[in-house]
Every structure is written in structure tokens, then in C-alpha cells.
Image 1: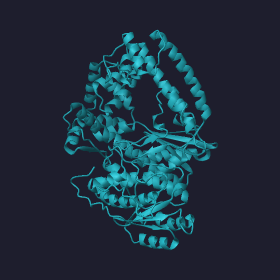
Image 2: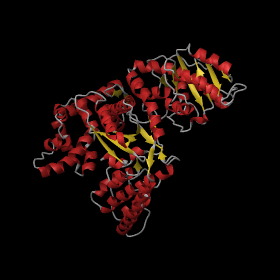
Image 3: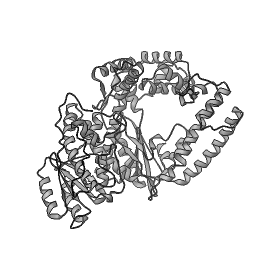
Image 4: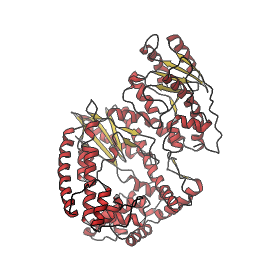
Length: 602
């Protein structure tokens, strides 16, 4: 993590901590805070400070105290639970310094801090640094971003010293977290600026975190009856599939057991030649898809697995994740995806399949409150538009600038479709190819997706590059740049390190090259969606529209508002998404309104 080119200020291991337990002591502390350029802040509660991923505790009343650090090795803990004049008296005094943007603060995980302070009536503002987000922006490929790790990498000091006499463990850890946060923040801030990551960090990631907290708090209402009916239907379909599968196999077996499926394939001489590390016949998704082109049984097993996942992961599990307010409050993670994309967990609502009718029907269970509407706005072909902008391919640029159907154009130019009937079939293949090329797909991968031979796939890819030469040039140049720098950037400066780009192992090197090709597109798409979220949220506030952003799924934003203002909110959302940034091609967002997520998506 440490950058050899940078000599950061060392994190001190000395500890000079104190506790504030009354109004007189707190007044002196607050007076001193106003003299500081930047204050490290940490919050003590049941969730430990310094966690390696973002957290969003929904109940902030568990906050036991706050710690403030103004200089290295110095920290003061305000004990809210034992405050002489009462907890509310302490909180009332802290609202002004914590809510004043003129007093700059550093925290570790601003979303968690906002989640813990908001229920106390404290509007945390003036957060100039978040060591969690700063570390993520500097290296988004890390698996975790714990404060103790960041401190150790800067200086070898990871905290963990035993509490001084008279200190409780949680209070001491909070004081230490504030101290380490303030010191690490200073070092990371320098590196952010040296790597030209200031805009991504300060204009996108930092302001986005409080919005994500509000989205998590808003949650999404779930109609359990819809899921119950769908679960029953899926159960019936699975029973039918089980009967057909076992009929072909000639005996009953556990379809969920890869071992038994492999044995069944061997008995029926359905083989791909691929085996697992333990020597068993592989029944991975890729193998099944390959075999499904020839045999019915693998195709049915794929269908079974898809339906079984819908039932177990969504229709049966989601009702158990509904909170007391009838809504699901998932978590939106800002520091997981290496491309800058947000991820969703507890539950993962981004992975609800939408390519099948049954998958789309799960979205019908996410409904608006009575008297409200849901609005879904989705960017149209965002990554392909970015491919055109980044590669500067004139044919592709012209298509988007003229408002043409890019898939139809590819069908005509690459697949030589001439008649309407030819175009209809060729467009379906062209759509797959367009998106596959953006992900630097190789002939084998394309052959599996489209259902053609590897030789035919190679011919299609060659024809595609001949049609769009700018794309070919980009695919050749980016890996070279990545090898030179060791990373690639999005249009707006987000970086992704590529440690495998110069690896001697060809497979590792090729994987890094594909990441290098994909990152400027995926990373820029993530930047644009985040900018759009911030713009739309600001517009709702500016125009006094009572609309709540609920979810972000890939290039789609979901908003809830009163039915009477739905049209205006939809228009505002569409406008802000389409004007989020200026490219050489127009951004297009399609917005829909409905009583549930599925209908709004239409």
C-alpha cells in the first residue's frame, strides 16, 4: 500500500489521551477544536471504529461517546453515557462544531459516522477526509481498508496498546481511532493530490457517502404476498424440471450435488473433458453451457439451477429481511468494486436477474407506499457510448451522434443484414457482440455466448474491428500504457492498479490486459452514475421535491415520491442524468413510473 515515491509523515505511537465528563471540560475542548485546522473524529458504539468496509448501523442511539484528536498522539474522549449534566446536554454542545463546515474533520468511514450521529440530531458536515474512502481511491483492489492496517503501513503503528488506568476498552479504542485517523488522513491526503485523485475523492466519493446512508435508511417496501405466490410457482416449475431431469437420467439423484450430476453425465457419456481439481467431472456453469448446445440434460440443469437460485435467494429469503417498517434496508458498499462501481449487500439487490420473465417478476414485489410511485431511470447503452467516446471511433461516434440504433448498425455492417427479417435476427447477435467487445472478449468466450464455433467467433471479432477501427486501436494501445504505468484511469481520473500486467504468467498477464481495456469504460460509467446521483439529489432539494433515492443498480436509479409529483420528479431525474457530464456522444436516460419496480422499469 505504501508508495515508495512518497515519504509520509510518520504516525506517532505515543499516547496522551484524556476523558471529558462534564460541561466545563467539554466547553474547553470545543474552544480548542475551533483553533484546529483539522480534527480527527471517531465514535464509540457497539460497532468498533476502524472497520475495513463501510458500515451503516441503523440505530445510532448506541453511540457511547465521541473522540477528537487535534495533534499526533493527543486525543480526547467525550463520555456521553457518564456525562455529568446528561447525554443530551453533551450532544447539544457538540451539534455546532460537528455540524459546522468551517471546522474540518477527518473520519474513518463517514457513512458510519453519519449513521451514528444523525439519530442524535447531529448533522455531520465539514468532513474533509475519510481515510476509508481515501485508501480505496488510492488502491481499489484491496480486500479491506482497516484503519489499523493503514496506520501500520504508514508507520508500523497499528494501535492496540492496552488502555491506560481508568479507561474502558471501547473509550480507549475510540480515542486511539481518532488519533490514528487524524494522522493517517494527513498522509493519504498528500498521496491523493500527488496522484491527481482529488476530484474523484472530494467531488464524488466524499459527498456520495451521506447520500448512500439516506438511501439505506429509506429502504424499499416489499410486498410479501407477491413473493409468496412466485415462490409457490417456482416450486411447481422445479418439481416439473426434477421429473424431466430424473427421467432422462433414468434414476433419481440430487440435482444440487455437482458430484452426482457429474456421475450422471459420465453414465450417459455426456462429457466435456474438463475436470475439477479433485479429478471429478466438472459441472460448472461454463461447462454446462457448452454441453447444452448438444445435450438436453445440461440445458435442463441450467434452467433448474436458475429457478432454484431465484427461489432460495430471493422469493424465500427476502421476506425474512424485511424490517419492522415493512421495508428492506440493504447496504450500499462504496469500497468493494475495483472499477468504482457500487455494490449491494444484505441483501444484494443488484443481482436480481432481469433477463428472464421470472427474474423480472421479483421486481414486482418491490412496491411504492400507498399514495406514492416508483420512478426508474436507466442510462441507455452507457458503456457503448463511453466506448465510442474513449476510442474516438468515427463510425461509432457518428451512429450515436445521429441517434441511430447502434445494434442495428452493427448488424448491417458486421453481419451484413439487409432485409428486415435478417436485421431482426442479426440485431440480437450484434447486441451480444457489441457488449462483449467492450469487455475485451476472446473468440472462445464469444463462441459460448452466441453459440457459434471458435473460428466463426474469430471471424466476427475481426470483422467488428475492421468496421470499428478505433476500437481495435484502443484495444491495442491501452495494455501498452498499462504496462508502462502499472495502472489505468477512467476519464475523470479514477485509477485501477494492475499488478499482473507485467507478470510472466501469460494467463495472469492476459487477465490484467482485459482489466486494463475494461476499466476506463467501467470506471467512467461508475463515475457518471455517481455524479448523476449527486446531481439528482441536489436537484430534488433545490426544487423542493420530496423524492427519495432508494437504489442504484448498475446504470439505473430508483426513486420514490408522492404520485402527484411523479411526472416532475421523473423529468428532473432524467434531466440530471442526461446532463451529468459532457461527452462527444449524447447521454440518454429512459425514465418510467409505476406502482412497483417492474412496472416502473417498463
